[in-house]
Every structure is written in C-alpha cells, then in structure tokens.
Length: 178
Image 1 (cartoon, one colour):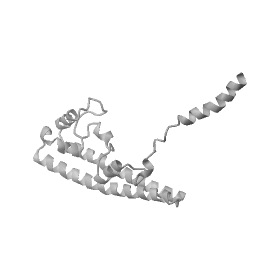
Image 2 (cartoon, one colour; image 1 turned 135 degrees about the horizontal axis):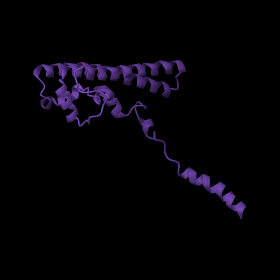
Image 3 (cartoon, helix red, strand yellow; image 1 turned 45 degrees about the vertical axis):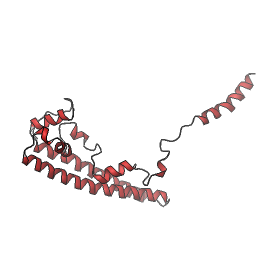
Image 4 (cartoon, one colour; image 1 turned 120 degrees about the vertical axis):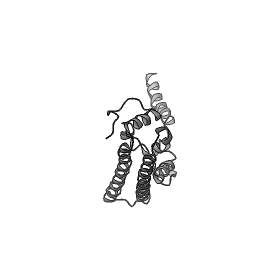
C-alpha cells in the first residue's frame, strides 16, 4: 500500500505542479515594437516627461518647473518669475525630448540586434552603455531644472508648492533659498 501511494505521488504531483505553472510576467510583451519598452514608456520618452527621474529633488523641496507653471496663480508668481520658469521648462523639455528620442532609438537598436540574433558582447556593451549614458543625461536634465527652479522661487513659494503638492514636512533640508 505504501508503495502504491509513493508511485501515485510521483505521477500526480508533477501533473498538479505543471497545471499550476503561471504564465511569465512578460507574456504578451513579445508583441511590442520595442520589447523592453511599453507604448506608454515610448510616449513618455518622446514627449519629454519626467517619469519620476527628479524625485530626489521634488520630494526635498526643489520644485519642478512644469508643476510650478501649473500652479502659477496659487504661487503668485511675478511676471519675471513666470517668464524665467517658462524659459527653464522649455529648455528642460527640449533637452528631455531630444534625449528621449535617442533612448528610444538605442532601445530599438538593442531589440533589433537580439531579434536578428546578430548581437555580440562588444555590441551589447556599446549599446547598453550608450543607453545608460543617455538615461543619466536625461535624469540630470530633470534634476538640474529643479535645482534652477529653486533659485527662482522664494522660500514662501517653495513651502506653498510643497503644500499644494501635498508633501509632508519630510525631506532632509529646510525650506530656504539656495
């Protein structure tokens, strides 16, 4: 009887385990134009969105120019502040779009190298290294815009910005002009 139970366990257990196998979290993504990027990722890069790249600044009392422009009335921006903020945003946005386009191109190149099965380790290192460099540049563009934005606002406006964005009193720096 014990032998029958063991044999049954060796037959039934693999069948149960196989039937409970979950599909990969990547299932369906093989249909993407660029496998590593969703359509939304591509759109965000091409439109120059921040994508959370400046969180270190944003959550430590360094406002972002896009959100400052959106809250210009509540922040009571002067004409000069509004103009400087718009210029800062335009500069940041143009650089972000340019870099985003390059990132998407490089991701497409990487995808193509794998799709055609013509990739070598030196190519891999070169393309991924360039993607990493571009992503770093993109992050610097967004973080630097927050750094420059801090210089345009008063400490009161920065505190108001944090309140409008519903940020608590967290963060490591005091409100102040830097």
